[in-house]
Length: 218
Image (cartoon, rainbow, N blue to C red; front, side, top):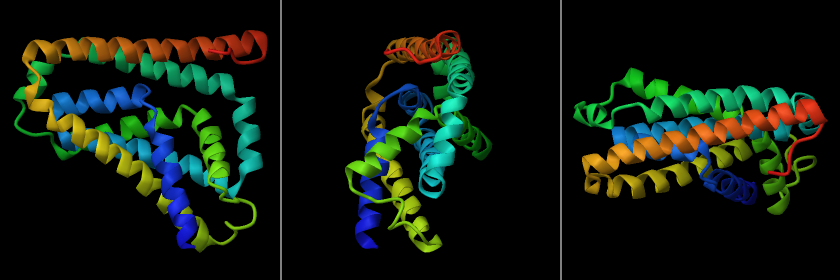
């Protein structure tokens, strides 16, 4: 059981390493609003990854069929949300955010929910997690067959994902004070553009899938 937990931690950590739109968003929030906002945002993404892991563990075949048949919808919906957030970040004044003495609990909750929902709109994560489960040789069909063992695996995935976000946010936060106002402004602009482009690519991917019946090779 301990081996399964360690393997699940590896899956959670590696599954979160790719710096996509969620990573850019967490970095941007850390720089603009502080470590707590960045980590809570990362925790939202980690929670969503754990939900995907639960689907993979409990009902792999059924979930895979659902995602495959609704792939385009997830691409378009998720991409549109990401693009809107990118626009909002692009036009947000980071100086005003820096002047705020602290981030309220309500704002932290908003940070958590936003990244949680955004991560859920990318169902391709589940296939990545399935591949990682296979890579670490964690057999989901035979070893994970009781509620206790399922809980162990999901706790491992969540712990590993949170470990990655804690590491990333700590590094970014360490150098946060060295950013001048002009640099913060440029970071907001660039982060917003990157997130917007990633969202548009996702929307394009969904439209392409609807028109041609298969995703692009991008």
